[in-house]
View 1: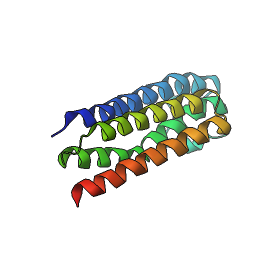
View 2 (view 1 turned 90 degrees about the vertical axis):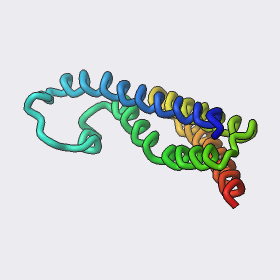
View 3 (view 1 turned 45 degrees about the vertical axis):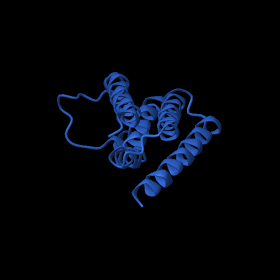
View 4 (view 1 turned 120 degrees about the vertical axis):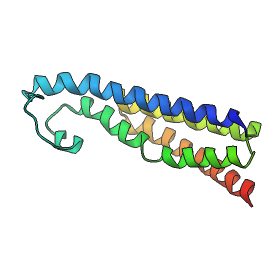
Length: 141
C-alpha cells in the first residue's frame, strides 16, 4: 500500500481541524460582542448566525463547511488509490496539488473572500480531483 498518497490526505485533515479552531477563535469573541451569552444559549445552527455576526467572522465557518463537503470525495479517492496500489508520482503530485489548492481556497475565503480569487482555486482543485478520480477508476478496472 502506498503511504505517499495518504500524506496529503492527512495534511488536509489537519488543515480542516485548524480551520475548526479558527472558527472558534473568531466566533466565540464575536458572539460575546453581540451580546450572546454562551452559558444561556440553547441549540441552533451556524446558519442562524448569518446576519447576526459580521460576515468576516462567518467566512471561516463557511470555509470549514466547505472542507467537510467536497474533500470527502478526495479522501475516498485517495483511499481507493492507496488500496489499489496506485500511489504513483503523478497521483501523489495531484493529491498534493489538491491539498495546496484547498488550503489556498481556505485562506482566500477566510480573509478577503473575493470570488475572483476563490473561484479559480475551487475550479482548479475540482479539476485536480476529477483527474484523481479518473485515475482511481482506471486503477480499479
